[in-house]
Amino acid sequence: MPKVYSPSQTVIFSECPFKWYTQCVLRYSHESGQTEPQRLGQAVASAMEYFNNVWKDSGVKPSGTDVIAAALSKAEIPELVDSPAYSAMRKVLTKHLSAEPTPDSWLPIAVETPRPDHGNCRADVVYQTPSGRVVRDYKYTTSCESRYVVGRLQGYGDHPQRYHYAWSEDASLFQIVLISGQPVKVHEQVWSCDPADVTRWLMSQQVKWAVMEQMERGEIAPWLSDLHSTKYGPCSLYDWCQNHKGDHTLLPMLGYVQRPKSDATTSL
Image (spheres, rainbow, N blue to C red):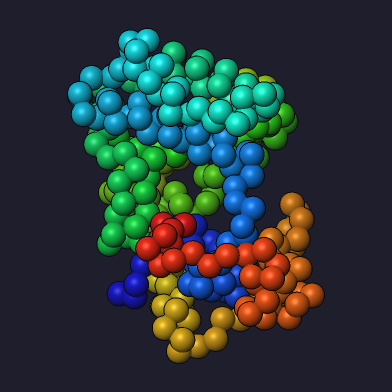
């Protein structure tokens, strides 16, 4: 079996091998860092990670105000305190933690636990339930109008991450919890993970992983995608790739920094 890569790395490769090689093998990222929505999403993830770890370690679902307050402290971003988007995030997160709807019979058995044999993927939380294992993934959005919710949830359900987590955690169900700042609302949806579908997914991924491994070793060159934009806009590397001919020596001049290997995010 070829080397296994994480769901996010595999998706980037599927979009454009050249982009994947630049970001994940050469480890270049823009010095501007995370956007505000990304930071808010990370804050929500940190709060839920704390909450679920307390549950996992104690074996009892947390309900006290002290645990909720401690979880909310993990989502503090002092420099964004005057941002309306930050206030909205805090409001919906407080509401969700105060009325956390997960059944008491579900026990977290893994929280953000890397799986080295599965591309270092890390499910937000894995529950052992009376009917089997469930993988849950939290998503945060600053805004999601009601007319877009169904499509957005289905996009997460169709994402290969669903099958990657089912494979790595031997799970039968995959759940998305979509937390929205505007309007303040939490949406949940669950999909089954049919073993036959997981097997078909794995066969497809192994072909990609074999090519990715060859590129990482320098045995074949990473090729360019034929498409350079999506419905959301141009590729994040568009200017460098198209206007500067994809010359890696120019990346530092364009505001990109190369992360040390020890800082590389293998579970991208």
